[in-house]
Length: 266
Ligand SMILES: Cc1cc2nc3c(=O)[nH]c(=O)nc-3n(C[C@H](O)[C@H](O)[C@H](O)COP(=O)(O)O)c2cc1C
Image (cartoon, rainbow, N blue to C red; front, side, top):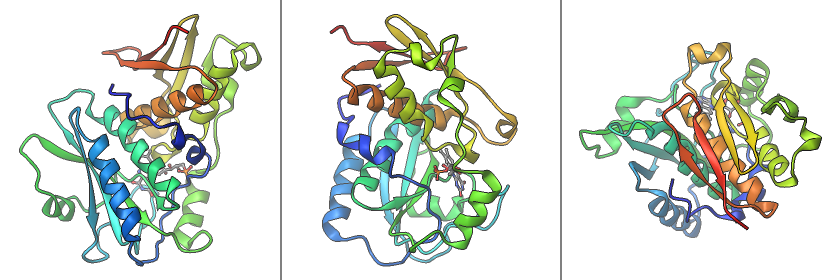
């Protein structure tokens, strides 16, 4: 993974971010929009293209599908476009894409990862896609209506979207109080990460000089795939560790583990 663009400034946004589904149509302030476009360009590459697209009409996100609510009103959306020939494309979308989501959060803007409920035909028309490219996910971006909208409330209830697994449940073979501070920091940042249908499909195995991420799939993963979630968890773990003074590099694996975080020598 290209890790040079990971920014510690994103750390605080991890705890501020929340998926929002009802927006004011007010355009994003120009200087914020320009900052986002610059960040999108920086995060693009490595089989991934991040684009900001202005809404032409409100029809982008369809209604209820599989428990998900309608997403409405936003002035713009982010499209995460991937190179389908890359076997790790969805994990990379999660990793770099979450950087974009946290950047937006830091600018005071709201977002919501969406990969199931958008109108693919309309999105494809708005983006010039090469033959090997596919829109992997999108996110509305803008200012959400004050308080939780009805869709957010219904959604929170249906998906228990604020319910998270305990820190102890995220690690294999160790109690949380036995672990070094930087690992606890990493796990704490993963704990609040967004995931499709709040499935939290991750678990970590700790070794002296590395941390392995592997899949822990629940019932919900019969209908949603976990790869984007893995990439999101990787970025969160890295930011949490970084904030507590340890850096390292994620290496994607062919399986059964998803990826390995190899700690930099001190
Ligand atoms: C990969 C991915 C796909 C998602 N797809 C949708 C979606 O299609 N529709 C939706 O309303 N929310 C979607 N979400 C948002 C999740 O439901 C949300 O992150 C989760 O319930 C946790 O809530 P929080 O983000 O407010 O912490 C998605 C999240 C991720 C990470």
